[in-house]
Image 1 (cartoon, one colour):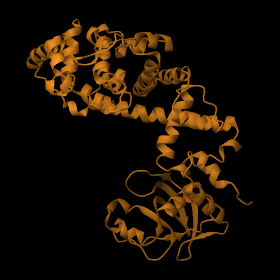
Image 2 (image 1 turned 180 degrees about the vertical axis):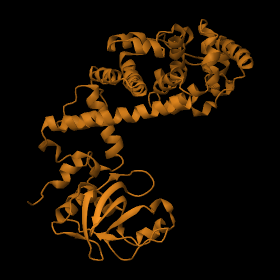
Image 3 (image 1 turned 90 degrees about the vertical axis):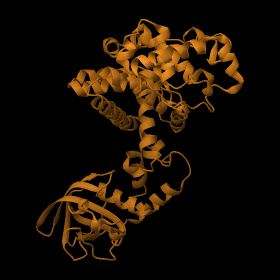
Length: 436
Protein backbone atom coordinates (compact mmCIF):
# COMPACT_ATOMS: atom_id res chain seq x y z
CA UNK A 1 0.00 0.00 0.00
CA UNK A 2 2.91 2.36 0.74
CA UNK A 3 4.30 2.03 -2.80
CA UNK A 4 0.79 2.50 -4.16
CA UNK A 5 0.59 5.88 -2.41
CA UNK A 6 3.91 6.79 -3.98
CA UNK A 7 2.51 5.90 -7.40
CA UNK A 8 -0.44 8.23 -6.69
CA UNK A 9 2.07 10.96 -5.94
CA UNK A 10 4.11 10.35 -9.09
CA UNK A 11 0.98 10.33 -11.23
CA UNK A 12 -0.54 13.40 -9.53
CA UNK A 13 2.60 15.52 -9.96
CA UNK A 14 3.58 13.87 -13.26
CA UNK A 15 7.05 12.97 -12.01
CA UNK A 16 7.51 10.51 -14.84
CA UNK A 17 10.78 9.02 -16.13
CA UNK A 18 12.51 11.03 -18.87
CA UNK A 19 11.92 8.36 -21.52
CA UNK A 20 8.55 8.28 -23.36
CA UNK A 21 5.70 6.53 -21.56
CA UNK A 22 4.30 3.40 -23.17
CA UNK A 23 1.55 0.92 -22.39
CA UNK A 24 2.46 -2.70 -21.79
CA UNK A 25 1.40 -3.22 -25.45
CA UNK A 26 3.96 -0.66 -26.66
CA UNK A 27 1.59 2.22 -27.46
CA UNK A 28 2.84 5.74 -26.65
CA UNK A 29 1.04 7.45 -23.72
CA UNK A 30 0.84 11.23 -23.39
CA UNK A 31 -0.60 12.61 -20.14
CA UNK A 32 -2.43 15.85 -20.91
CA UNK A 33 -4.20 16.11 -17.53
CA UNK A 34 -3.55 13.67 -14.67
CA UNK A 35 -7.04 14.31 -13.25
CA UNK A 36 -8.37 15.07 -9.77
CA UNK A 37 -7.40 12.85 -6.84
CA UNK A 38 -10.42 11.04 -5.40
CA UNK A 39 -10.32 10.38 -1.64
CA UNK A 40 -13.70 8.66 -1.62
CA UNK A 41 -14.91 5.34 -3.05
CA UNK A 42 -14.28 4.72 -6.76
CA UNK A 43 -11.33 5.17 -9.13
CA UNK A 44 -8.27 7.01 -7.81
CA UNK A 45 -8.33 9.97 -10.24
CA UNK A 46 -11.32 11.50 -12.00
CA UNK A 47 -11.49 13.67 -15.14
CA UNK A 48 -8.08 12.67 -16.51
CA UNK A 49 -7.19 13.38 -20.13
CA UNK A 50 -4.62 11.23 -21.95
CA UNK A 51 -3.62 10.23 -25.46
CA UNK A 52 -2.85 6.60 -26.24
CA UNK A 53 -1.38 6.45 -29.70
CA UNK A 54 -3.49 8.87 -31.74
CA UNK A 55 -6.63 8.48 -29.62
CA UNK A 56 -7.69 11.02 -27.01
CA UNK A 57 -9.30 9.54 -23.87
CA UNK A 58 -11.13 11.32 -21.03
CA UNK A 59 -12.10 9.41 -17.89
CA UNK A 60 -10.74 7.88 -14.68
CA UNK A 61 -7.36 6.45 -13.71
CA UNK A 62 -6.93 3.53 -11.32
CA UNK A 63 -3.57 2.88 -9.65
CA UNK A 64 -2.29 -0.33 -8.05
CA UNK A 65 1.08 -1.76 -7.11
CA UNK A 66 0.33 -4.90 -9.18
CA UNK A 67 -2.16 -5.49 -11.99
CA UNK A 68 -3.63 -8.47 -10.12
CA UNK A 69 -4.76 -6.09 -7.34
CA UNK A 70 -7.52 -5.02 -9.76
CA UNK A 71 -9.16 -8.43 -9.33
CA UNK A 72 -8.26 -8.72 -5.65
CA UNK A 73 -10.18 -5.48 -4.98
CA UNK A 74 -13.15 -6.64 -7.05
CA UNK A 75 -13.00 -3.83 -9.62
CA UNK A 76 -13.75 -6.29 -12.45
CA UNK A 77 -17.25 -6.69 -10.95
CA UNK A 78 -17.88 -3.02 -10.13
CA UNK A 79 -19.69 -0.80 -12.66
CA UNK A 80 -18.10 2.31 -11.09
CA UNK A 81 -14.80 1.29 -12.70
CA UNK A 82 -16.17 0.98 -16.23
CA UNK A 83 -15.05 4.53 -17.05
CA UNK A 84 -11.38 3.81 -16.22
CA UNK A 85 -9.26 4.66 -19.27
CA UNK A 86 -5.83 3.58 -17.96
CA UNK A 87 -4.57 1.20 -15.26
CA UNK A 88 -1.29 2.49 -13.78
CA UNK A 89 0.87 -0.05 -11.92
CA UNK A 90 4.38 -0.66 -10.69
CA UNK A 91 4.31 -4.28 -11.85
CA UNK A 92 2.13 -5.48 -14.73
CA UNK A 93 1.56 -9.15 -13.88
CA UNK A 94 -1.84 -9.68 -15.51
CA UNK A 95 -4.27 -8.33 -18.09
CA UNK A 96 -7.27 -6.56 -16.54
CA UNK A 97 -10.88 -6.25 -17.67
CA UNK A 98 -13.79 -4.05 -16.60
CA UNK A 99 -17.25 -5.17 -15.54
CA UNK A 100 -18.55 -4.42 -19.04
CA UNK A 101 -15.83 -6.55 -20.66
CA UNK A 102 -13.21 -3.98 -21.82
CA UNK A 103 -9.55 -4.96 -21.67
CA UNK A 104 -7.82 -1.92 -20.15
CA UNK A 105 -4.52 -0.47 -21.35
CA UNK A 106 -1.87 -0.55 -18.62
CA UNK A 107 1.09 1.67 -17.88
CA UNK A 108 3.94 0.26 -15.77
CA UNK A 109 5.61 3.22 -14.05
CA UNK A 110 9.22 3.17 -12.95
CA UNK A 111 9.71 4.89 -9.58
CA UNK A 112 12.79 7.17 -9.60
CA UNK A 113 15.31 6.04 -7.00
CA UNK A 114 15.54 9.40 -5.16
CA UNK A 115 11.76 9.44 -4.72
CA UNK A 116 11.80 5.91 -3.40
CA UNK A 117 14.50 6.73 -0.85
CA UNK A 118 12.86 9.96 0.29
CA UNK A 119 9.52 8.23 0.67
CA UNK A 120 11.04 5.42 2.75
CA UNK A 121 12.58 8.05 5.04
CA UNK A 122 9.27 9.90 5.30
CA UNK A 123 7.43 6.69 6.22
CA UNK A 124 9.86 5.37 8.79
CA UNK A 125 10.33 8.53 10.86
CA UNK A 126 8.47 8.63 14.16
CA UNK A 127 8.99 12.37 14.61
CA UNK A 128 6.14 14.82 14.16
CA UNK A 129 5.76 16.31 11.67
CA UNK A 130 7.46 13.78 9.43
CA UNK A 131 8.60 16.46 7.01
CA UNK A 132 10.32 18.48 9.75
CA UNK A 133 13.77 18.35 8.13
CA UNK A 134 12.69 20.38 5.13
CA UNK A 135 10.77 23.15 6.92
CA UNK A 136 13.79 25.29 7.99
CA UNK A 137 14.84 25.38 4.33
CA UNK A 138 11.57 27.00 3.16
CA UNK A 139 11.23 30.79 3.40
CA UNK A 140 8.57 32.22 5.71
CA UNK A 141 6.65 33.96 2.91
CA UNK A 142 6.20 30.67 1.04
CA UNK A 143 5.14 28.84 4.21
CA UNK A 144 2.49 31.41 5.06
CA UNK A 145 1.13 31.49 1.53
CA UNK A 146 0.64 27.72 1.86
CA UNK A 147 -0.97 28.14 5.29
CA UNK A 148 -3.35 30.68 3.78
CA UNK A 149 -4.59 28.00 1.38
CA UNK A 150 -5.16 25.67 4.34
CA UNK A 151 -7.27 28.30 6.14
CA UNK A 152 -9.60 28.49 3.15
CA UNK A 153 -9.70 24.70 2.97
CA UNK A 154 -10.64 24.43 6.66
CA UNK A 155 -13.29 27.14 6.41
CA UNK A 156 -14.82 25.55 3.31
CA UNK A 157 -14.88 22.20 5.11
CA UNK A 158 -16.57 23.64 8.24
CA UNK A 159 -18.97 25.69 6.14
CA UNK A 160 -20.00 22.57 4.21
CA UNK A 161 -20.96 20.86 7.50
CA UNK A 162 -23.09 23.87 8.50
CA UNK A 163 -24.73 24.13 5.07
CA UNK A 164 -25.64 20.44 5.21
CA UNK A 165 -27.07 21.02 8.70
CA UNK A 166 -29.16 23.96 7.43
CA UNK A 167 -30.37 21.83 4.52
CA UNK A 168 -31.44 19.02 6.85
CA UNK A 169 -33.37 21.62 8.91
CA UNK A 170 -35.22 22.92 5.82
CA UNK A 171 -33.32 26.22 5.84
CA UNK A 172 -33.65 26.99 9.57
CA UNK A 173 -30.47 29.00 10.23
CA UNK A 174 -31.44 29.77 13.83
CA UNK A 175 -31.67 26.09 14.73
CA UNK A 176 -28.49 25.30 12.78
CA UNK A 177 -26.70 28.05 14.69
CA UNK A 178 -28.02 26.73 18.02
CA UNK A 179 -26.78 23.20 17.26
CA UNK A 180 -23.37 24.49 16.11
CA UNK A 181 -23.03 26.70 19.18
CA UNK A 182 -24.07 23.88 21.50
CA UNK A 183 -21.60 21.47 19.90
CA UNK A 184 -18.76 23.88 20.61
CA UNK A 185 -19.91 24.34 24.21
CA UNK A 186 -18.76 20.73 24.54
CA UNK A 187 -15.20 21.97 23.92
CA UNK A 188 -14.13 18.79 22.18
CA UNK A 189 -14.77 16.04 24.72
CA UNK A 190 -18.54 16.47 24.89
CA UNK A 191 -19.00 17.98 21.44
CA UNK A 192 -20.94 15.02 20.01
CA UNK A 193 -23.14 14.81 23.11
CA UNK A 194 -23.98 18.53 22.99
CA UNK A 195 -24.84 18.31 19.30
CA UNK A 196 -27.13 15.33 19.95
CA UNK A 197 -28.72 17.20 22.86
CA UNK A 198 -29.27 20.38 20.80
CA UNK A 199 -30.99 18.42 18.04
CA UNK A 200 -33.47 17.26 20.68
CA UNK A 201 -34.27 20.73 21.98
CA UNK A 202 -37.61 21.94 20.54
CA UNK A 203 -36.76 25.64 20.20
CA UNK A 204 -40.35 26.71 19.30
CA UNK A 205 -41.55 25.12 22.56
CA UNK A 206 -38.74 26.68 24.61
CA UNK A 207 -39.57 30.06 23.04
CA UNK A 208 -42.95 29.99 24.83
CA UNK A 209 -41.04 30.12 28.13
CA UNK A 210 -38.13 32.33 27.07
CA UNK A 211 -38.96 34.89 29.76
CA UNK A 212 -38.54 32.28 32.52
CA UNK A 213 -34.93 31.29 33.18
CA UNK A 214 -35.89 28.46 35.55
CA UNK A 215 -38.11 26.82 32.94
CA UNK A 216 -35.43 27.15 30.25
CA UNK A 217 -32.94 25.43 32.53
CA UNK A 218 -35.49 22.74 33.38
CA UNK A 219 -35.95 21.91 29.69
CA UNK A 220 -32.23 22.07 28.97
CA UNK A 221 -31.25 19.86 31.93
CA UNK A 222 -34.22 17.54 31.48
CA UNK A 223 -33.61 16.97 27.77
CA UNK A 224 -30.00 16.21 28.63
CA UNK A 225 -31.21 13.28 30.75
CA UNK A 226 -29.58 14.81 33.85
CA UNK A 227 -32.76 15.01 35.95
CA UNK A 228 -32.78 11.28 36.63
CA UNK A 229 -31.61 10.62 40.21
CA UNK A 230 -29.56 7.67 38.94
CA UNK A 231 -27.29 10.04 36.97
CA UNK A 232 -26.08 11.56 40.24
CA UNK A 233 -23.22 9.73 42.03
CA UNK A 234 -24.79 7.74 44.87
CA UNK A 235 -22.87 9.61 47.57
CA UNK A 236 -24.51 12.90 46.46
CA UNK A 237 -28.05 11.65 45.82
CA UNK A 238 -29.47 12.33 49.27
CA UNK A 239 -27.95 15.82 49.40
CA UNK A 240 -29.41 16.53 45.94
CA UNK A 241 -32.87 15.59 47.24
CA UNK A 242 -32.37 17.58 50.45
CA UNK A 243 -31.22 20.82 48.83
CA UNK A 244 -34.50 21.00 46.89
CA UNK A 245 -33.19 22.41 43.59
CA UNK A 246 -32.92 19.06 41.83
CA UNK A 247 -36.48 18.13 42.83
CA UNK A 248 -37.88 21.52 41.73
CA UNK A 249 -36.17 21.27 38.33
CA UNK A 250 -37.30 17.68 37.92
CA UNK A 251 -40.91 18.57 38.74
CA UNK A 252 -40.88 21.52 36.33
CA UNK A 253 -39.38 19.40 33.56
CA UNK A 254 -41.98 16.66 34.04
CA UNK A 255 -44.74 19.26 33.64
CA UNK A 256 -43.11 20.76 30.48
CA UNK A 257 -42.27 17.32 29.07
CA UNK A 258 -45.95 16.36 29.32
CA UNK A 259 -47.03 19.69 27.82
CA UNK A 260 -44.69 19.47 24.80
CA UNK A 261 -44.33 15.64 24.52
CA UNK A 262 -40.60 15.76 25.29
CA UNK A 263 -38.33 12.72 25.59
CA UNK A 264 -34.89 13.14 27.21
CA UNK A 265 -31.74 11.76 25.64
CA UNK A 266 -29.81 8.99 27.38
CA UNK A 267 -27.49 10.58 29.94
CA UNK A 268 -24.81 7.98 29.16
CA UNK A 269 -23.69 10.17 26.22
CA UNK A 270 -22.07 12.64 28.63
CA UNK A 271 -18.41 12.19 29.49
CA UNK A 272 -16.98 13.16 32.86
CA UNK A 273 -13.72 11.18 33.00
CA UNK A 274 -10.65 13.45 33.08
CA UNK A 275 -12.94 16.46 32.62
CA UNK A 276 -12.28 19.62 34.59
CA UNK A 277 -15.28 20.51 36.78
CA UNK A 278 -15.85 23.84 34.97
CA UNK A 279 -16.44 21.79 31.81
CA UNK A 280 -19.06 19.50 33.38
CA UNK A 281 -22.22 19.38 31.24
CA UNK A 282 -24.31 20.82 34.11
CA UNK A 283 -22.20 24.00 34.15
CA UNK A 284 -22.15 24.39 30.37
CA UNK A 285 -25.92 23.83 30.17
CA UNK A 286 -26.47 26.46 32.88
CA UNK A 287 -24.33 28.91 30.88
CA UNK A 288 -26.30 28.13 27.72
CA UNK A 289 -29.54 28.66 29.64
CA UNK A 290 -28.42 32.16 30.64
CA UNK A 291 -27.28 32.96 27.10
CA UNK A 292 -30.59 31.81 25.65
CA UNK A 293 -32.61 33.65 28.30
CA UNK A 294 -30.97 37.03 27.68
CA UNK A 295 -31.48 36.69 23.90
CA UNK A 296 -28.25 38.56 23.23
CA UNK A 297 -26.46 35.97 21.08
CA UNK A 298 -29.05 34.69 18.63
CA UNK A 299 -28.29 34.26 14.95
CA UNK A 300 -29.56 37.72 13.97
CA UNK A 301 -27.58 39.39 16.79
CA UNK A 302 -24.41 37.60 15.66
CA UNK A 303 -24.88 38.91 12.12
CA UNK A 304 -25.13 42.46 13.46
CA UNK A 305 -21.86 42.46 15.41
CA UNK A 306 -19.17 44.37 13.49
CA UNK A 307 -16.05 43.13 15.23
CA UNK A 308 -14.41 40.78 17.70
CA UNK A 309 -15.13 43.04 20.70
CA UNK A 310 -18.85 43.04 19.96
CA UNK A 311 -18.91 39.26 19.66
CA UNK A 312 -16.98 38.82 22.90
CA UNK A 313 -19.56 41.03 24.61
CA UNK A 314 -22.71 39.26 23.37
CA UNK A 315 -21.25 35.85 24.22
CA UNK A 316 -20.67 36.81 27.86
CA UNK A 317 -22.55 34.44 30.11
CA UNK A 318 -22.26 32.73 33.49
CA UNK A 319 -23.86 29.87 35.36
CA UNK A 320 -27.30 30.23 36.90
CA UNK A 321 -27.48 30.80 40.68
CA UNK A 322 -27.45 27.17 41.90
CA UNK A 323 -24.48 26.27 39.69
CA UNK A 324 -22.39 29.12 41.01
CA UNK A 325 -21.89 26.95 44.10
CA UNK A 326 -22.18 23.48 42.51
CA UNK A 327 -20.60 21.45 39.70
CA UNK A 328 -23.09 18.56 39.97
CA UNK A 329 -26.37 18.15 41.83
CA UNK A 330 -25.92 17.69 45.58
CA UNK A 331 -22.17 18.45 45.65
CA UNK A 332 -21.48 22.00 46.94
CA UNK A 333 -18.34 23.83 45.77
CA UNK A 334 -16.71 27.16 46.50
CA UNK A 335 -18.85 29.98 45.10
CA UNK A 336 -17.83 31.07 41.61
CA UNK A 337 -19.84 32.81 38.91
CA UNK A 338 -18.45 30.26 36.45
CA UNK A 339 -18.38 32.81 33.66
CA UNK A 340 -17.56 31.80 30.12
CA UNK A 341 -13.94 32.98 29.99
CA UNK A 342 -12.44 35.21 27.30
CA UNK A 343 -10.46 32.22 26.01
CA UNK A 344 -13.60 30.07 25.85
CA UNK A 345 -15.50 32.82 24.04
CA UNK A 346 -12.59 33.13 21.62
CA UNK A 347 -12.85 29.41 20.84
CA UNK A 348 -16.61 29.78 20.32
CA UNK A 349 -15.97 32.61 17.85
CA UNK A 350 -13.33 30.58 15.99
CA UNK A 351 -15.32 27.35 15.82
CA UNK A 352 -18.90 28.64 15.65
CA UNK A 353 -19.22 32.26 14.54
CA UNK A 354 -16.49 32.39 11.88
CA UNK A 355 -17.57 29.23 9.98
CA UNK A 356 -21.24 30.21 10.39
CA UNK A 357 -20.65 33.64 8.80
CA UNK A 358 -18.60 32.01 6.04
CA UNK A 359 -21.34 29.45 5.36
CA UNK A 360 -24.01 32.16 5.37
CA UNK A 361 -21.91 34.17 2.90
CA UNK A 362 -21.77 31.14 0.60
CA UNK A 363 -25.51 30.58 0.99
CA UNK A 364 -26.55 34.11 0.03
CA UNK A 365 -23.70 34.72 -2.41
CA UNK A 366 -22.16 37.49 -0.29
CA UNK A 367 -18.36 37.64 -0.72
CA UNK A 368 -18.12 40.46 1.83
CA UNK A 369 -19.67 38.20 4.46
CA UNK A 370 -17.05 35.54 3.71
CA UNK A 371 -14.31 38.17 3.87
CA UNK A 372 -15.70 39.38 7.19
CA UNK A 373 -15.38 35.84 8.58
CA UNK A 374 -11.74 35.68 7.50
CA UNK A 375 -11.00 39.11 8.94
CA UNK A 376 -12.54 38.06 12.25
CA UNK A 377 -10.30 35.02 12.34
CA UNK A 378 -7.26 37.13 11.57
CA UNK A 379 -8.11 39.56 14.37
CA UNK A 380 -7.90 36.83 17.02
CA UNK A 381 -4.64 35.97 18.72
CA UNK A 382 -3.16 32.54 18.04
CA UNK A 383 -4.50 29.60 20.00
CA UNK A 384 -1.98 27.97 22.30
CA UNK A 385 -2.16 24.20 21.97
CA UNK A 386 0.17 21.27 21.45
CA UNK A 387 -0.26 21.38 17.67
CA UNK A 388 0.78 25.02 17.32
CA UNK A 389 3.64 24.59 19.79
CA UNK A 390 5.13 21.74 17.76
CA UNK A 391 5.11 23.78 14.56
CA UNK A 392 6.45 26.87 16.36
CA UNK A 393 9.45 24.83 17.49
CA UNK A 394 10.28 24.29 13.81
CA UNK A 395 10.44 28.03 13.24
CA UNK A 396 6.97 28.61 11.80
CA UNK A 397 5.68 31.95 13.07
CA UNK A 398 2.27 31.53 14.69
CA UNK A 399 0.64 34.86 15.52
CA UNK A 400 -3.03 34.79 14.58
CA UNK A 401 -5.92 32.33 14.69
CA UNK A 402 -5.61 32.06 10.91
CA UNK A 403 -2.19 30.47 11.47
CA UNK A 404 -3.42 28.05 14.12
CA UNK A 405 -6.47 27.00 12.11
CA UNK A 406 -4.22 26.30 9.13
CA UNK A 407 -1.86 24.17 11.21
CA UNK A 408 -4.75 22.25 12.80
CA UNK A 409 -6.05 21.54 9.29
CA UNK A 410 -2.61 20.39 8.20
CA UNK A 411 -2.28 17.99 11.12
CA UNK A 412 -5.79 16.54 11.02
CA UNK A 413 -6.26 16.24 7.26
CA UNK A 414 -2.71 15.45 6.15
CA UNK A 415 -0.32 14.48 8.96
CA UNK A 416 -2.70 12.27 10.96
CA UNK A 417 -4.06 10.61 7.82
CA UNK A 418 -0.52 10.13 6.46
CA UNK A 419 -1.36 12.20 3.39
CA UNK A 420 2.10 13.76 3.51
CA UNK A 421 2.50 13.41 -0.25
CA UNK A 422 -0.62 15.45 -0.92
CA UNK A 423 0.56 18.64 0.72
CA UNK A 424 3.34 21.02 -0.21
CA UNK A 425 5.64 20.32 2.75
CA UNK A 426 5.65 16.67 1.73
CA UNK A 427 6.25 17.66 -1.89
CA UNK A 428 9.28 19.73 -0.90
CA UNK A 429 10.58 16.84 1.21
CA UNK A 430 10.18 14.40 -1.66
CA UNK A 431 11.94 16.46 -4.30
CA UNK A 432 15.07 17.10 -2.22
CA UNK A 433 18.25 15.38 -3.38
CA UNK A 434 16.76 15.29 -6.84
CA UNK A 435 19.44 15.19 -9.48
CA UNK A 436 19.10 17.64 -12.39
